[in-house]
Image (cartoon, rainbow, N blue to C red; front, side):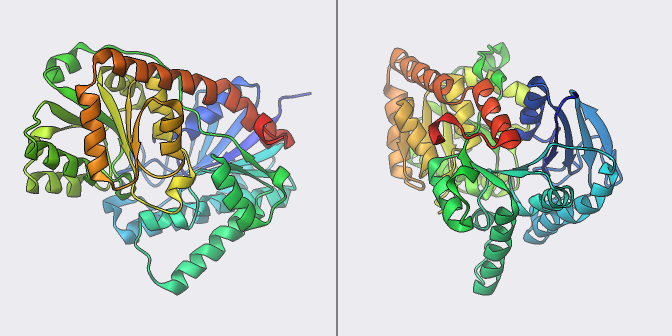
Length: 415
């Protein structure tokens, strides 16, 4: 009897920096054959990754996983219109690309659903046509998450978005949530029986658990207390909070702190303008986009790591991927967000958390870390790393994902 096969549908995949890539490679480590129907890489800046364009390449093999790439309209400029066109173009083209999978047999379909929820449509079509189970991993709850990117106020449009999103979730045989809070929301939204909605937190790649010493960073930035943010620059990240913190530090004549920002995205230009207008450029260093393999050296070098999110009814339902990689890094974490992410930092006792948008509290927490002894900060980081090992172990969570996708077997905490 041959290996069992999984068809994974996700708009975002390598070389874009999404954990869908590591999840699929993890499935191959567990002995499954994996094919992926994905888009052409252009996230986050909306420009084709090197070597890609609209016409291809349309088929690749990456680390033992076969990729079938569907066309999509890139997010170029990250305007509301371009993001909308990007959102609808992938499911449109990918549904026609299902014809490329004719003659193949899969035992299960798995949709790794970030944004948009529309990416689940080709997975729904394939699963229903071939009468095989579909499991959707809900990483961004729609339409709520949409409103953190596009300012949709029209009541009719919001009602339509809610109906479309709920339709997609209901058509999935099983759903996976990242937290118990999100699970309850999905149960209410879909009316599914409890055994069809599981909780499996996101893990992070094992590379984030390793210390990587980089002498160049020490040479360039070793003169100050460095707070690192690594990730996508988007409106939801609340990076403007850091600018307000810097203004307060300047007012208090605190000059020994620097924010190192690693990444890129649609909010970079507006962030740089805000920094200039507030006259706090000397508090910031922009390092640009880096591959995931570079991030551990920034984590290792950092005196603290920072994660912010704007207030949102949906964002607080999930544990951000950044929180799992930060706890793995073994450094103190400054957290300015609501809900599950803040809960993890408080529960792990590996840093300080405050409500989304509370810049005064964020400033106070930063100064508490700044004036804390290095030994105390090291103890905080060690507690985070221990919490990560207990709650976000890669092999354990991969096994839970595979068991639920293939057999409907609930994770231990849900049985």
